[in-house]
Length: 333
Image (cartoon, rainbow, N blue to C red):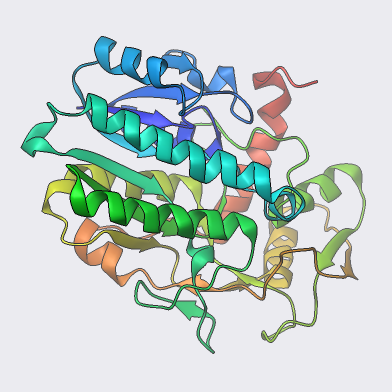
């Protein structure tokens, strides 16, 4: 089986590509390298360019006519950045995704069963959480940031397209990936990431305090609650979805640990893993932040035979191991 992965040189996309290779699936990578890394595409079929570039997509399918499915990971994903640059986020995440699906429809007429298969790497941030901070696939949608709204808009757009054209699109919704490929082939490429665990590692490396942004949320300890899922578990779920795609009777599946972790709890877990605890200080919430939620993944277990395997501590250990290797693996300036 051969699969096209957009954003396949990024953190999540490259990990999915590694999981595909381990499962005997050949990945073809399309990435414009705005945030992705060329090093993550080494040894893999790689096309540098944009998902909205029709002639390039035509070339990919002409040179790889055995592509049977697409995993669409290409997107901008930083919530505060989306608040500062909503136009850029809607252009990159929505407008270009529309162009990309148009190109797929033009090139996918010879796909098995007469329709294109596409897995959309979406976000559970589009939900409105219940009073217990949990969400399911039936939870109401209420995205609270421009980033989250771009994902919700894409899903609605894809549903309309799939209703009338020969394409089936499965959205996998998840929250906060952590960790790295356990074999350390790839990991988070950013030296200064904006998410909580990245900031903890930065604080640890610089012997500086970690700022807990937002302490007045209606959670057990006042800090935001998140569903921190190991990126390798996410990759395994995408592979499982590829394997079972034709038998699925749904267009949405949530991926998560089934347990919420507050930012303070994540920091406490971090301090249990490291040899030198980081200091914790409180700070105001960032623009676009919300109390948070975590997802139940019963549907993923039932339809994909999948459950998250890695613990929070394992995700932290793998993140720390990758952080120690990152600068030697990547040509960072």
